[in-house]
Image (cartoon, rainbow, N blue to C red; front, side, top):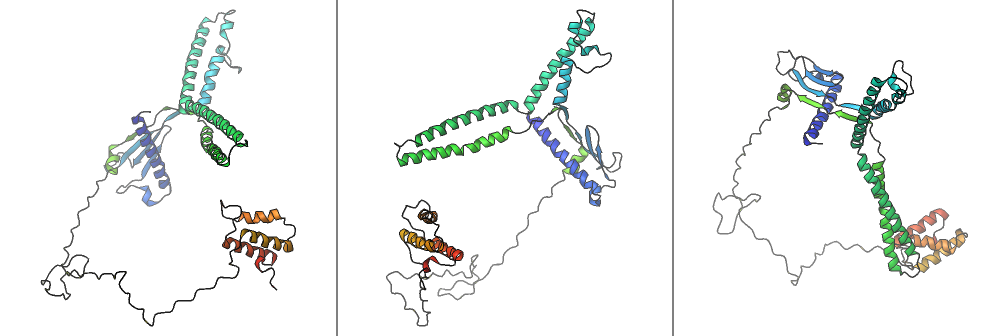
Length: 383
């Protein structure tokens, strides 16, 4: 597709959308949508079989702004399957009986017994034309639906999935070997996870291949004509923004008293300052210099709060022991494996085997058990 064809299609889509948008607004009946600004007559939307015309009033109006604004010649399409059936019928004949139509028979066989040379020539010519037209029709259908790219994507997908499957089989076979060390197995597991991640790319290609083909083929491109009056109306001159004159700022005079020598009277104050005199900032005291004593009326520091009950840091074995004793009273069906699984599930990720549950999740677990069984694990032996 050339650049001129692309630009014409873009212009067609723009005007086609504008025509129907303005038409629906016009059908709403609002006064602001019935007429163009400055026009006396209503807008006109002319819809023909192959043409759309937008007109601002009649063309014979005295107003130079009225008349045709733009014209859209619609594209022409053919239906692939309907036309293909017609060409195949012309080439192969039909089982449908049509009176006085001898071309529906096989005249090459019939010419051996009857004189049908003239009809046979017409039939052969029709078959050749239909064959050529059918070939062109298939080529246009293939091009408009991108079937060549479809076949390439299909072959690419098949090859990628085959390689991915072979790679995963090799990795699984290596992981089942006992001779590999744990670090080597970790590397293989990462490679296997990468192979699984590639499946998302396969899904994108499959979704692309699952699109439906269009049976409509464009045989004539759309055309648009923008009339001169429409161009003059749309391209209104843009008003230039006049530069705003800045008001002169009043000079502020200094009013502070200064040490000798004083500033000359009427000296200009710098922008953002209240005084023309540049006072020096007080130096910060050095670290070694003695700090001033705190005032007597300074507020006393608040005493530190005592840790809440149950905030003791329990070890992994202590947590197992507490829960084992707890479940032996509230739920004897819990096994040692179940209790160990409960503790391991709440440990920090990537923690070692004997790592404990952190204090906050440990207290939350105890509180949940208290709400469920009405007995707190940490106060089980309290009176």
